[in-house]
Image 1 (cartoon, rainbow, N blue to C red):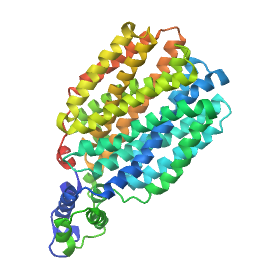
Image 2: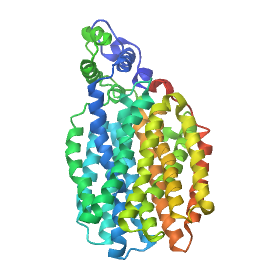
Image 3: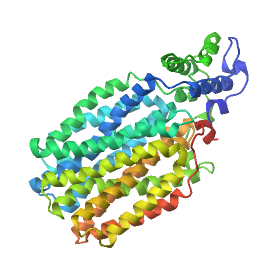
Image 4: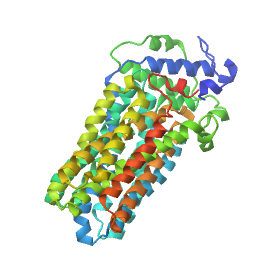
Length: 477
């Protein structure tokens, strides 16, 4: 329920005295309607690029460990179980970050929390470059994970709240493509620079630009929907006016609003303040549990593959380091291609049917690998790349879908808690793979496990609600 849903209708209680008169509910509804009518402009591009840059290096830092492990494994004599623990450490930190920064985003705003999370992962990336042992890197990756885990749900919430109902899927996924592009760039940079300059270069590249981006984030305006939800109507109006002024077309709403003076702050009823427990209230329990299963299923497979592929190519298939890194980087190329296709069609197919198709086809390709498809390295490259592309597209769509299904007062918390299942699955998946391989289990067994997880995701996808082309406030009623 938004401020417009919760505030008494009387003009006196809202503190509005100018003409034409609005009560708090009417003012909130008016501002949201103006936001929905704002034409596309260069400003939206800038906002997506700046927030997307933070997401790009979030992805870079999340995956960088995969492309330094082939060097560190023989250098520090790291065992397969230790590889899984090192990969998983970052995801444990990301769980903490997802909870902490999503809570902070509801209380202090989207922008300051996105900037703080970006600064944390950038500083810790530089610290990782100076690590001298397995244990030191383990601790640093854990702390860095707090920033990595905090940035993405807050960024996704911010971009979702800037989006209009019609075409929101395309608008959001063209931003969200930056994350798989970041993963793809990590693969290409890792394949090219790590053999030439050593493993530290990955952490240096992941850290230095992040500090600049954190400062750029602070220059973005706050989410108008968050400001409205907090009763800060004048601030919300100022941001919306800025968006209208930046558009190529004049907005009739901007002229209509010129005679209206909105208060800096109106009282926000307790009902307008979201609570953690509301995620499992009768109104939201079903969509929350389905979202959690989608996140866990998609990312257990996607990040299990992503983090282990370079090491599998060197240890199981005995490819030379440059060849292994190039082969592993193909998975992210496939993901970018499929997310681009998804962005172009998602507002026609809907979120639900894309997820059903991608989980279903992914289960088939993973099942083929599990039943003997891992014997020949060329087929392994083709099928694992296609599998990751399919499941990786789901990883992008859940970032679109999850902020849509919650009201503004709990959107960041709902998204942050959902992404914690990403982190849990991503910590468990690589660790399980490490122990399976360390105990003598074959690669076939790993992919049979992945196929089973994809089937669980497929079942959950059939229970999704459809959100395409609906205003956010309409979905959350």
